[in-house]
Amino acid sequence: MTDKAFPCNSEQLRLPGPAGVIEAQTSCPDPARAVAATAVVLHPHTLHGGTMQNKVVHTLARTFNELGLRTVRFNFRGAGGSEGEYDHGTGETHDALAVLEWVRAHRPHDQLWLAGFSFGSYVALRVANAFPVGRLVTVAPPVHMYDFDVLAPPHCPWLVIQGDQDEIVPAEQVTTWAQRLNPAPELRVLPGVGHFFHQRLHDLRAVLTESLAPTLPAVP
Image (tube, rainbow, N blue to C red; front, side, top):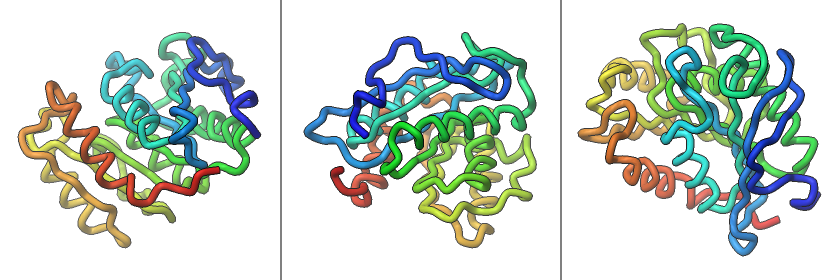
């Protein structure tokens, strides 16, 4: 399918979801850079103000676009204009699966990538246990708040990014968790970086580009 089927740079997209309407936003790369992949990006905790407009989520999506991927950001149930109520990760997993199915219907030949920040990382790993994603990126996964140990590593390349000065997610717990996984993800610990990457979003972009650019899928 072409980008006519996949709306580019949508300001307000309303997708069908298991709890009602899912508010989403898409973006496409420069056509000269486009590759055969689309990334879905998941936002932090709904009850703490997390939405698809979060600056880390926005940086993830923008970097994916710069690498040549199409992107979809969306609000979990109960966030922004999405219907429903916060559901502790379970309902949010179903929301993400619904968005991935929508992408697969519109871009059937693309690799589907998945990325999440904070609470979105937990949901992303849950989704990767249930859906064949081509690559997973988790930023500041809150391993101290949710039972990550029951979630198997995905069957795809996996990048974990963590700031060593994270005031919310203990970096040492993320490191211990990641290192005991088999297979272990690629773990990048950024010195001097806090949870929200204040004044360090350029470092997040640099790590993403360095890790992901060498393994991009082919041009469609």
